[in-house]
Amino acid sequence: MVTPPPILRTVAELRALVGLWKRAGQTVGVVPTMGALHEGHLSLARLARADSDRVIVTIFVNPRQFNNPSDLEKYPRTEDRDAAMLAGLGVDAVFAPAPDEVYPPGFASTVSVAGVSEPLEGAHRPGHFDGVATVVAKLFGMTMADRAFFGEKDWQQLMVVRRLVADLNIPVAIVGCPTVREADGLAMSSRNVRLSPAARARAPALYRALDVAAVALRAGTPIPEALVAARAAVLAAGYDSVDYLDLRSAEGLMPVDRLDGAARLLVAATLDGVRLIDNIAV
Image (cartoon, rainbow, N blue to C red; front, top):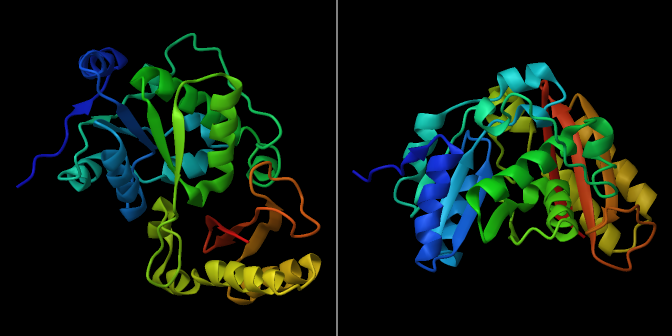
């Protein structure tokens, strides 16, 4: 039986370990997660392993990026299972701090990234990306990582993190990794376990709607027409609501009125009380 990687709880013990690696001239890759790991996370760990001498997976359910207390309470916490899943992947350490280790008494700083954080998720989840940017900046400082690996499923988050490190001169290379999907196309997410069996059967309609819209757009269908049809398809499949389904420039997430550069279709919709997001390139 393969032994799971050690779980570190404090910044002091994490830095002591990373310091040994750094003095040996080794590169450090970090995979930031909120736990409830699935194959998408494991794919990030494998990519980190292939690209770094040492790999840290962080597990921290960050309270500052939840604008809905109920959502924070319901978020699955499966640390023992997560550590077991990482066994055999070449992960050198798991950093799983308590909230007061990350936000000690008197903590009073917030990192805010303007522009790319404001539309889409930013408009529907006020304060969410402030929480993301703050914890990511802290994790980079805590782990002293050389590279950080993020999934493209959270495309807007990836763009926010890239803007963050560019603006603040944080010496971490941000590696975007392809979305991992179930066999039926549903993007892997820790939230998927909250879907009832009936809702899980309907869930792949989200990806199908994006895929059909992307094909239509590439064929010359007017953007408004393609987006209206895609939203209608999601609702017709049984989703409760669609927060947004939009076409944006890939990096700046600006509105797109014609396809003349890299663009991304992004969607957030609620099914069976569970909010799911996805995106694809166009």
